[in-house]
View 1 (cartoon, rainbow, N blue to C red):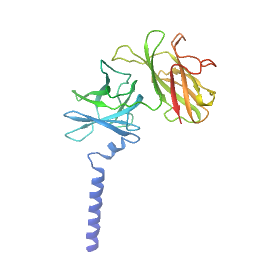
View 2 (tube, rainbow, N blue to C red):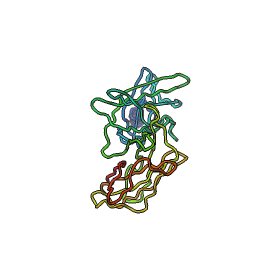
View 3 (cartoon, rainbow, N blue to C red):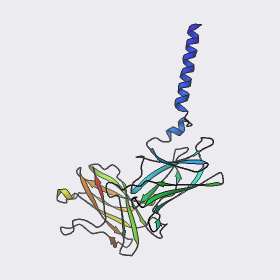
View 4 (cartoon, rainbow, N blue to C red):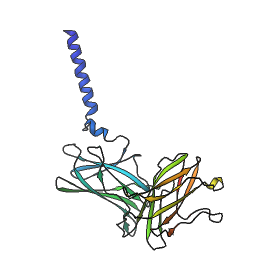
Length: 283
């Protein structure tokens, strides 16, 4: 009898311990939603908590892949069927403007997670900052949440903003490789234009020419690079970036329109060691 009572007591303790470890208002599948991403911050209103996530747990100047989920404050449950639109805005000293950003979609294979991207073309400073408004609808009821977000400068240049010879302002952002290697890397870039201070659509049918160079090594280049062209599937620009050794690389760029006319950027020669538009990688 004592042996049976002891076993029952151990089972009860185990059950209580397991319950306390898996509770925290999160079912196991919800916890598994977050594999590979870390919380950036929360944006709240009276009804919900909007949680923002990224691979690094932070944002930075340039392209940012962002995930989010919405938690009901009363039930502590995460919403599975929300329709979401977000709106980033830079509050400058004399004006405000938006930036390129994608639609927000349900993350494939996830129950509560949504995702998209935002390209912050400039970093915050002591006088100017970014805010993010999340507008969403659940069961026909509309909600909004807004908060300031931190967008520090990137260590290396991952986005370039310029005016082309056609008078249009463009934003070109490096997406991949995130972790470059000594290899021929898949390269992905986003190309956007400013139509208004709030509208920055994807540019269609252009080309991005690349010429990676190592300034510290006599500005030598690399073989087997493939210029970037647009994919119909994701509207982004894809090509191949060859990096032959570790160190600092400047990826010189030229942006060409649909007529193969150079809108910005210079070809590298003995007299022109760098383009006026470029990305930087170091590994």
